[in-house]
Image (tube, rainbow, N blue to C red; front, side, top):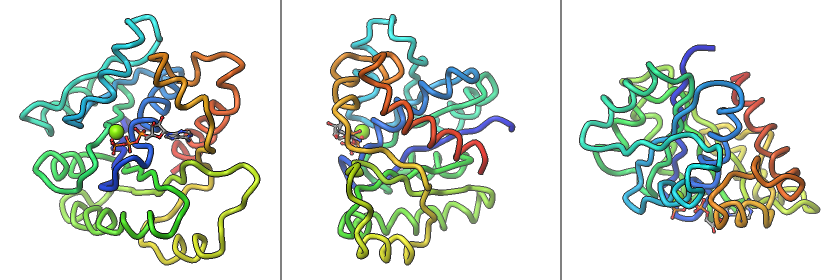
Length: 211
Ligand SMILES: Nc1ncnc2c1ncn2[C@@H]1O[C@H](COP(=O)(O)OP(=O)(O)OP(=O)(O)O)[C@@H](O)[C@H]1O
Ligand SMILES: [Mg+2]
């Protein structure tokens, strides 16, 4: 597979963009050269990686700056994978620029129809970006799944009607994701405590690499 720029994006706040971007980048970095890009003015991912004090084995983080397309294409020439943590918006020049150069948009959503509907503008933004970037792929990633509960019927119906396909793999709700953020590392750095979360992320990566 060629270089891949993966934008983790959803206009809805708190759906797990930063959690997915960070852990995805850690798993990809075990496979090939990977870099993170912090496109969120909240700077969550920069703070997260900074807390690890450079010993966390996490990829480097670049800021998006005033020339998003330039930053992303430069990084994608140097690294096989570039993972972009986006702010909770679909508006603004930076988002437009990211979606125009990305190969894949991953859209984490919480498993409730209301949350999914709140992300409907994402499907519109992806379709608009395809006018300039026809090869852009997009997938929903279910987050905060409850281990024992299958998706509700309402949610399955809502997902089926959504314009963007959903990955089979998703992230369960697990304390390890929260602990990793506090400890400034990824779930891969947590040993046994992170094992199940690593299995979630590995399944997502394997699915994404086959797209
Ligand atoms: N699968 C999960 N299990 C448990 N906690 C999770 C999970 N995913 C995310 N969280 C927690 O939910 C909160 C929101 O996650 P996160 O910051 O990744 O969302 P976000 O979409 O980046 O938010 P924002 O829109 O503000 O950028 C965080 O406290 C995070 O630790
Ligand atoms: Mg975030």
